[in-house]
Length: 528
Image (tube, rainbow, N blue to C red; front, side, top):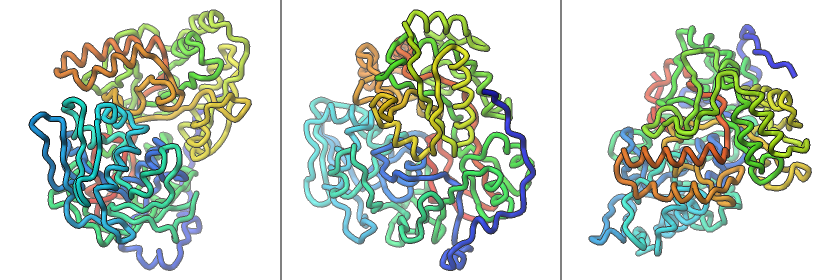
């Protein structure tokens, strides 16, 4: 398999025919923002960790607390709260004016059910529920969380930005986390417009005229969620050249994930603004299915560490050498917990001979390794091809399984062998911000409760469980080193590189929320 960079083609004429709109949408152009945000098929933020779903949830749902720009938890749906003298009981009262999109009132019982459902799968929530004696409604607008023992991170947990606690209606939140919520009724600043939405093509949101923003100015994901547009339309344009042409023609205002090949064209155009939205970089990695052969064998997983030449992936995924780097620490590159413990495997160019040695020691017998290949995500598609090529050179029976990203996030939930529709390796990325927190979804190595790949290490989990009760920065840095030693012995995933992920927006679209978490907030933005 030969891997080559795609050449930058001249942008064609405006893709007007591609964006023929119903008259109801055309008539609202001056009050509308159009954004290229990617395809979304799963709308439940508890069921999946997809960033596309996260962006959707940010629009239609609200949260009890949220992180401000200084990463401090601030009340959002909560109007008042207090904690008992023994620090075991937290009482919360909802602020006035909260209602669901169907016109019914938000109740304390909705909050209780939402916390319990979110806590089934989100590591912060799992940790909280382990320490909870009870969560119960006091009356229609107040509820309490009672703990077995004091836990100083209750508010930080409720405000987590990586996989936020979105409050759903009780009738939705009583569904198990393994069953999707499909109603799309929240209490947030936008309403989902099912009538105008076309799955695979566009998603439409209307301003929620009944939503009452908080009085505080927007800060991070906290503060007043003021919406300045009647409608926001998300277009799914998989072809990069068509997306660029639409941006140049003014038919769209924002492009979330321009491909690396087009960065120079965007940067040189005075009408566009390359914008990181405050993000510190995207870390590309391969998640490994630890349940199925051949990578249920730890030596096979360790072999992957030596096979990967991160610089090769960096050249493939970023045309700007200043906008990328290699990643060795499990805690990423921008965290106070990043360290170099147990990273001796890293070598420029990789170490093919060491990888082959480990493969031989594992007793590998030619089992098929299926790499999920997201053909509608340009960077992921290219990197998957390169990954397959690297594995094949090492004698691994690697095979690509082409599919859309929406199909991938469904298939990656399957634990069956590849012969029964399972998978072996999945390439994805996350914000470097996520890796500063070992309570985020990537870190748990708790088997069936873990994220995709279901890695299991009791030694690592024993160390991770100490994190919330470790008080000082110095103590946490030492704990992070111990955790990283076990992490790279086990190898639940491998890094490919880090790139600085730019979004592109028309210069007339201003005041977008800048925050290092992966979600995109649509409130506060306006046109000038």
